[in-house]
Picture 1 (cartoon, rainbow, N blue to C red):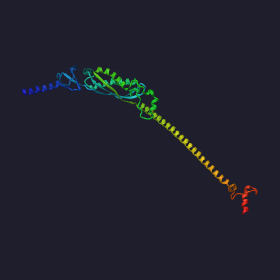
Picture 2: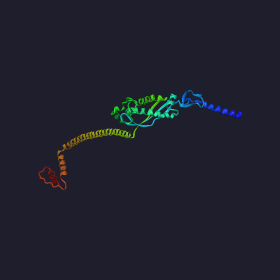
Picture 3: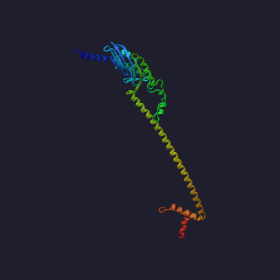
Picture 4: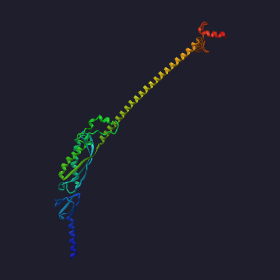
Amino acid sequence: MNMKALAALLALIAVVVGFSSAYTVDETEQVVITLFGKVNRVALEPGLHFKIPFVEKAITYPKNLQPWDGEPGQIPTKDKTYIWVDPFARWKIVNPVRFFETIGVDTRLATHRLNEIIDPAVRNLITSNPLIEAVRNTNREMDVFEIGMEEIQKDKPGATAITVGRNQIDNKILEQARDKLEDFGIELVDVKIKRIDYVEEVRQSVYGRMIAERKQIAEKFRSEGQGESSKIRGDKERDLKQIQSEAYRKAQEIKGKADAEATRLYAEAFGADPEFYSFIRTLEIYGESLDKESNLVLSTDSDIFKYLKAYSGSK
C-alpha cells in the first residue's frame, strides 16, 4: 500500500472517529451518555460536545413540555351519574438519568406510564365527587338566558352548592399523579379535564328534564296569559255595562225631561180650550178603537157617542 492510500485511509478513519465522538445538544434537548449500557454522564448545556467513539452512546431526550392526551372513558360520579371524561396533561423530563433507568430509550414508552397513573387518579376523583362538583367551580348564581328559568332555579337551591369544584378536582388529580411520576424522572406540570359529557342513557334523561322544564315555563306563561286575558275580558264587560248603564240613565233622563216638557205644552195648549181637548182625545180613541172590520154597539146616551151624534145631526 502506497503512502497516498494510507494517508487517505487514515483521513477517513479520522473523519469517522471525529463524527462518532462529536454530538450536539439543542436548547430543547438533554443528552444522557452511557458507557456499556450504564449512565456515565449527562449533557444539559446546549452546544457541541464529545464522547468516546464506539464505546459511549448519546441518548437524546426532550427538555421542553410534552403532551399527554388521555382516552375518553365512562366514569360514574358519586351521585351515580355516568359521564364521559376526556382528560389531558402536560409533562416534562426533569431527571433524564432516572427516566433512562425506569422508562428506557424510547420516550413514547412514557405514555403507558402516564396512562397507568393519571387515568386512575382521574377516575378516583370523579367517582369521589357528585356531578355538580365536576362541572362548576363556585356557588355563583347560574346565568339564566331564558325568561322563566329563574323560577326553576329558585325551586332547586341545593343544585348549585359547590364545596370542591372543577379546579380543585384538577389540582387533586395533579397532586396524586405527580408524586408517583417523580420516580420515573417525570414532572407532571398540569392536568385538566378537557371535556365532560353525559353518556347516551343519561343524555336522554337530561333532555327529558330540559323539555319538562321548558314545558313548565310555557305552562306558566299560558296560565299567566289566561289570567291576564280573563282580567281584560272582565274589565271590558264591566266597562261595557257601566257605559250602557250610564247611557240608559242619560236616555231616560232626557226622555223624562222631554215627556215633562211635552206634557207641559199639551197642558198649556189644551188648558186654553178644554172642550177642544176633549174632542181631540175622543177622535184619537175613535181612531184606535174603530176600523173597517170593527162593530161597535153603543148607547145613544154614551159620552163617546155624542160627537158622532153631533156630527151626524149637523150633517
